Image 1 (cartoon, one colour):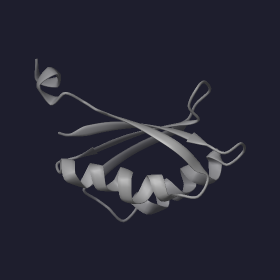
Image 2 (image 1 turned 180 degrees about the horizontal axis):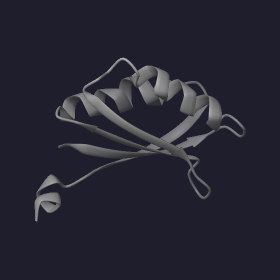
Image 3 (image 1 turned 135 degrees about the vertical axis):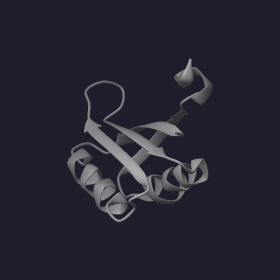
Length: 86
């Protein structure tokens, strides 16, 4: 199953609101599995997205998450599916 990890940098103090918005955006999409956490370090939020449709994952990151107010930047990593199976 295609999986992406998205690391998000946010404006100071806006991480809780961004997490809420991401959850709301994806609440109606039953074909996407979401895990999201605020973290300490270089990035503020980590998101794990899984779906049977890799194009859907790309769209969520580029068309939805990156357009949320107070998201400064994102770094997306796609899991190598062949390595998951070995």
